[in-house]
Image (cartoon, rainbow, N blue to C red; front, side, top):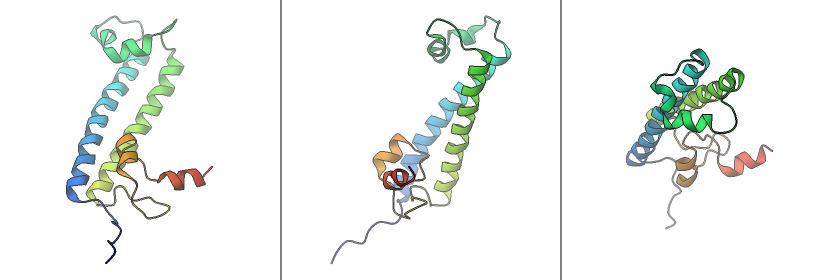
Length: 127
């Protein structure tokens, strides 16, 4: 008898993804706060500007302009919202199901892009 194709991830698998998402969410929130601080306290020299993330943002000829920092902060906020939505899908046990095909998104893709809602095939069809 042929093995029935899996239609959802097990609770153990969902827990693994939840941990990945929580770690990414924690880092994303810290990065967002750094960007927000860079916009609001651009001239201050406190310990925030010695953080590794801030150093990465500072690399290059100049520090980020407020406009660039604002755009990055917006992108970071959107990323946080996508991760939070992924946590809701885990609670609803709908996480990892492609919203176009209804099939499971491969684990490798979800580990790389934990907030993905489309399989690679569905994503490519959008182009």
